[in-house]
Length: 260
Image 1 (cartoon, rainbow, N blue to C red):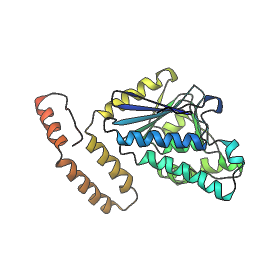
Image 2: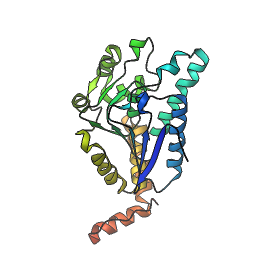
Image 3: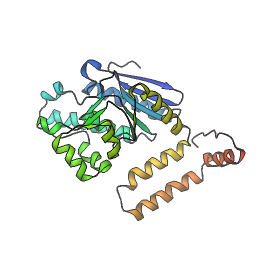
Image 4: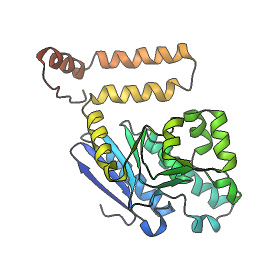
């Protein structure tokens, strides 16, 4: 399928979704959000894809934010719909059931930072900067930033960056736990593909259950989380992939997982 604002291709069992609006710093408008959701729907339906990289085109921006030109004309009703579309996009990313890796090649501000927050992992270029500057425009983050950032880096740190609007450079992002890895710009995609390939080589059901256990376990008390973990772990124990993994271990060979 042809898109106006995004590109999608694959390398082996890794999908690569690129937001491609370089003249607009890859800003998210309604059409782009719809195209991203369309790609995510296709990825979800493709059992051959076991990890997804999300990045931006060019060297300046991952996604510089939501499209301010479009936001300017919004009122109460259409503003609500615009924000909910962003929420739904990020929920699609978060609930994809395969690992998603935000490869942050430049600015990730506002809606771009929120898109990165919805991913499982974040790999950032040394030149990357992340932030939620919305209060400076008289609004608050509306694509999940007020909820996901404190869950990731803690309430106090999140409030600092939300209230001040200060940008977070790559090194600080790693220090805060906002990013998992900082990489030289010229090595960014190579390293990201290596990480994605490593994860994609794991048993798909085990990966899905691990993502589910962490996502929902963090929203409850420890005892309930442990019960959830036991239930999900029992599904993997009964899987064909478990038998393959153990057989491969004893036979000293690479396992061939089928996601069953």
